[in-house]
Length: 141
Figure 1 (cartoon, helix red, strand yellow):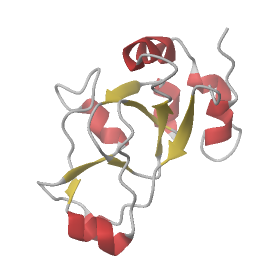
Figure 2: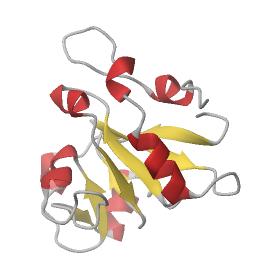
Figure 3: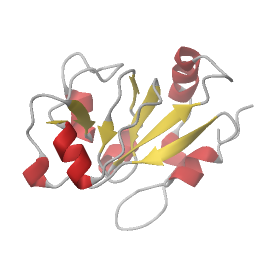
């Protein structure tokens, strides 16, 4: 997968920064449970302003569409993936796979990604987890 895109981990999202209703969506694992987000993340529980982004030195992911999924904890075992088509941020319990759009169609990529069992990448530890290189090392037959 590393030849046709790349994986990027999320960042810390302090509680005091959470709860915003406007701005850039800051997606967390729980956002996959919102009605309407079953296939594509369009609604977030948290949004952040340009001021927050600047102050915290967060980098908004603008290379969209991208695939969003859990990377640590019990949520990894659910093997859920969602497409995102708008600029976004993601918390440190999640990861995104960003397509090289010159190499393939992202809708096809989403279908292909659904066939990948990410639970097979989990590392043994206190919490199941994997990292970006694990995702990028997946071979596409």
